[in-house]
Length: 310
Image 1 (cartoon, rainbow, N blue to C red):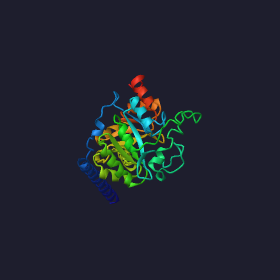
Image 2 (image 1 turned 180 degrees about the horizontal axis):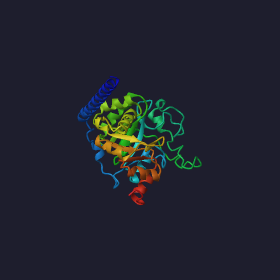
Image 3 (image 1 turned 60 degrees about the vertical axis):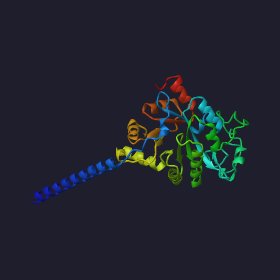
Image 4 (image 1 turned 120 degrees about the horizontal axis):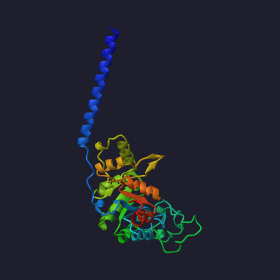
């Protein structure tokens, strides 16, 4: 009798497991069928170099020139970069200015919060004052007339490179002002937007839906987690680009499988913080779509001159 009851219990357990597995497969099928890839955006139609990897100069190439300055952006364009990343903040008089930090101290000869200075006051500072490539022994860009640019100055001068714009801070006004400027300069297919704050990014997507955006930090974590669980086919992204470091605490994040999964959902994958030759070669071999680097000159040399990555 006990043996019979035991067999009956096992049979019920097996049936329960089968039902659960069936329901999971059924749910997966429904979610996969209902999910949608992000539509292709014209921003990514620009031609690339022969490795099919976009060369993106972080803040214009902060390892080579004073960051977030028109001078750096022009130099990056001159050596053959495909794109630049820039950072935006709002001045006291509600002008969008290109600077990374919330204060001017690290990169200029000033000491105030960006939000407490007018655009004119910000542009009176020397944006090349603190740049040095020899640990502070020399400062070759001091007193060279390099200033903090406004977004309108960037849009007027940089016409042949794509611009990846990261909105800093928590003010929703920045999203509105940026959307207006992009449309005024007819650059809806030349810029891609990200933001530190999820609400700011959501606001920008709402008022400027025609412009490509990058995944937020939360969206990036969700995508990476789904990929690790082989569940990206059920995902419907609202963004066009995911930016990731190649590793995280020693764990490889960017892999050929991740890149393929992203492409299946219509997404591009860019590697960030790539500043050495061996890193550049590795992520290119993984099938990456773009590299964000402080040293665009090194990446260009590896691709075009020394053929290191071919």
